[in-house]
Image (cartoon, rainbow, N blue to C red):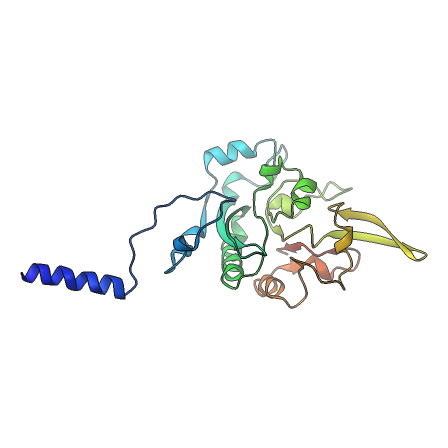
Length: 240
């Protein structure tokens, strides 16, 4: 009788104290996660940092990890996190980043998620065969992709895993030359982003100086391309 009473009491405490059995449901990058799997701090299990799995590193060969990449496999980390799109859906995201900034990125993306900051997609560039233009046109947030700075033989910060592009379609990179009443773009990336070069306009996923995304990245030591003078790279936050 005493044992039964103890078990009943424990059950009441278990319910009232908010304890729940471990959530064993499996979700993959790009999946939408129902709210039932996020309550009582369960969302924290989605924020992970691990070495590159063999299967992932094999997939990266010839795509984001190409011949001449100066960063070793062991200097890169595979991160997962959660993000919310403009409609409030919670989605599993993934990034490959340099180990130097891995913890910083997890902290930033966790705070963005907890504050409902909208990020539409977050998949590895290998999902797009490492085609940066295709990734940007799809408004995909990404980090590592080995490449050189356009027109040079200098490795991009993305090629080192030390830069992140956030919602790139709505926060493009561009250099322009004004001619008469029009504007000609010497460079515009992605090429479909012309409507979002006018930063006086309001539109979804726009990064603005002083918003939460901007403040968090700068607080953690990153530099924002939106303040550069020779060009504007509103999507881009890099580790100096």
